[in-house]
Image (cartoon, rainbow, N blue to C red):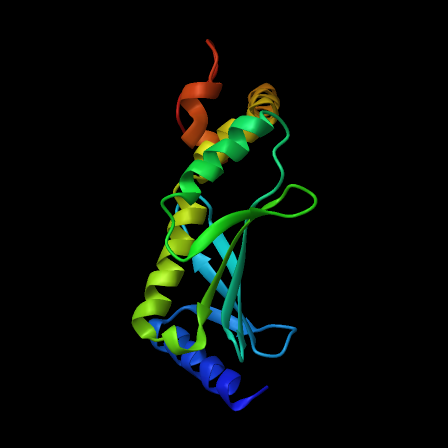
Length: 172
């Protein structure tokens, strides 16, 4: 790593440690792998790579939808219009990520806080809506299977209003 990327790596690592954010060294030079806790999406894993040109970011959001692809991806494209510094991107398999870049000179504690806050909001806030858009049939099957076996419905409670059928058990 160069002195610029070393300094950037140190800035990011120090910020993460002082903010109490879980991280570990990544496999690549200058990479820090950050785990952001969420509410709807339990955690978002984010790769931050410090390089001479600046800081790059990549975070997995959700896998390729099983159904309703056009509405699913259209929803993300509309959200892209409101995102600061980051954007939703799709890999060759159709899985969804957040990506972003900051110039080396623009990386400080305030900008890192804004960046990671934006990542967390963009991955966590729409997560249940993305699940309902892209995986509703699978969720109906899972609900029915759990009801038929008397299994817990706790992890599907957020979707009870769209999944529950007459005769299903009430909230746990």
